[in-house]
Image (cartoon, rainbow, N blue to C red; front, side, top):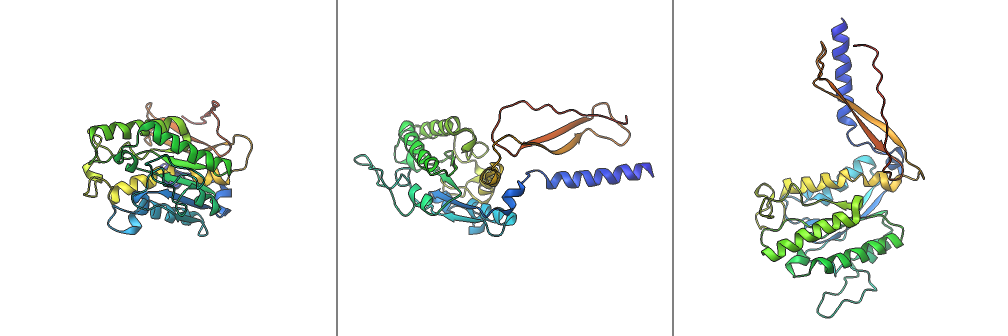
Length: 286
């Protein structure tokens, strides 16, 4: 009987753990969220075999599972560069593309976005726009959103098989610069998707060397989900709010094992913090 109870409790425990991998703030479940995506062909849905496999559409489905009233507006169009999505007031240097007022950061703000995602995989590098040039544009785009009090996430570059060595170096430099400059508001769309030659990994190549397939877009969707954008948008606490999200065991056996490890998952539902959190475990039975 004792063994049955333990097994039953373990079953309940692991069922709970599966459902609690990514906690959603209670406020995020009730707030109607509007996210606007600006970008190029990847965000527009090129690559997957069906539209519902594209990362923006997958992410929309995820948000509407949280709250059916959540919206995702997709302003992305193929061929877009960072110059095309600059603020409408921006005057492009001679020989550079002019901003597209229907699909740029200004348009996203005017749509009353609660958050903005920028997805610019490789068109800038393909056009020879350098690292500093791209970063200057990304920073202006981010500053424009921040001035409107709208949080903005910037995706890194993505591997592109058809680029030259010089193009690859630009891609890598921009990737690292986005991660270093934007920190928690950077979305890593590179690692795990590229091979050792900085090309699209064969497993994720749609066949054109430029766009990712269904499996690749699934990775991109998960990267956006893991950023916990709904929690950031909904949270209004002016302080850190650490909670114990879940516990899980490793090397656990019903008769006991000295190598059993208890792991805890702590989540901060408040403002960002680098503070150290102490977790104390008390055991009542060996």
